[in-house]
Length: 536
Image (tube, rainbow, N blue to C red; front, side):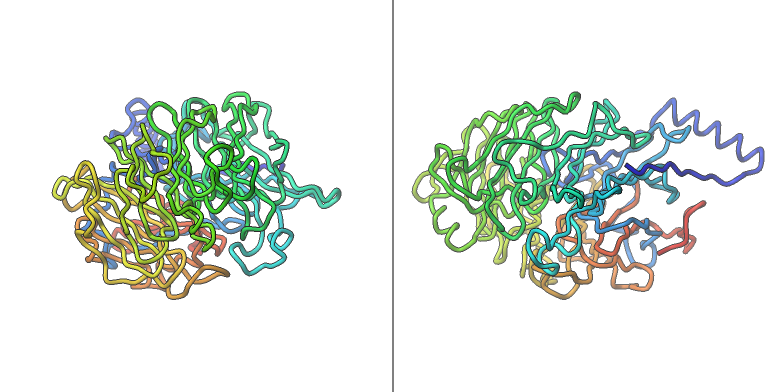
């Protein structure tokens, strides 16, 4: 494993240096009240996609004059995994806000989130070990993934142990073996922990064909990992595995089509939802179903040790299979403060189920809380949630070939008519990937952030991307987009599955262009941070 540690600082006058040291001591003793951590995909275990402690960015200052691209981090490959963020981490002899980025070239970076410096970079290739060329799996380099497959899913961070967990895929060019390994890295140094990495080695699991797209989750001390396939290339199954976070030993493995086939759990990159008891919620795609050993096209609820506790399958699961209408084209979201879980797929229908009784299967789906035709296109990026002090709980979605929509949640069901929608039509698949920033429910603080293809369908290949920001209280109002000043704000090529990360006044966007773009307030045009590398 290649490992390098880099950090640089500028010499300062003695008085300024003393003041900085004093300030650092104060901050070390008293962490910022609004310090934000993004430790998992979609911000929290509910997968709401919301940072509700954002006090810097508002609907009044996110505009093309005051807000834009500050700099970009250069990385060695496409960034499919949502970047993660830790505030006030003890690293490089001080406390710093740190952005963690994983790439499809099997690299992990720890960047200073405020100065563009690199604290450490590790790479899991070398000596005949490479990322997996996508053409080895699909026979084509211009489909769902272009280039290599390395770290595709969002990692998860355990702040208590100071560890970031991730799944890396490699191949050994000398033996022809394909490997998938779970790594546990020290947040401060990038060093392997707990005897890692460990190789995924379960009878019946195919490390070449098993595609690990869904983000990792942490539930009651277990790392939860789920698999599907690339381009439905078989044979494959929907595997879920749990590994002990402190020993990296396999706790349990579950095959959702044990006596059948397919049933992949891909969820367009969303991680499993996890409730306060550590129960895990997933949604499978096209596959065999019998309600006994095969659970394609189903909501699945597990204990943290992967005991299957409950399930829901739409009555028309066979029709979904026959037309490639994956139910699990997006992942589940737990509505905060309720006992409800929502999720949907390619039919544009959002299903609302009770977590204590998912409902199994009944004609017409009359046993569940609600079936809502939320979109005219496919639900891919999935739902996000924000509770507005003015409008109450809102659920947002931007599907393929459709408009960004905000729906009101009335406490028991979702009102079927949107309270607002944008005038911008998504150009096609996969729609948009959303996140929300807000200062609690404070009026004027809520912003819906979206990354999407700029003007072309992106079912296959690589296309230009765009970042957009909308008023969360009225998504008909677009506040800003990266095409208003493209020379300054261009995000590069769009990458599926990666939601924007917003923390402490900055927005971090991965891309297919080997960069992570950083957006924030321009501060009168002086928007390059002290000690930053030149803009890319």
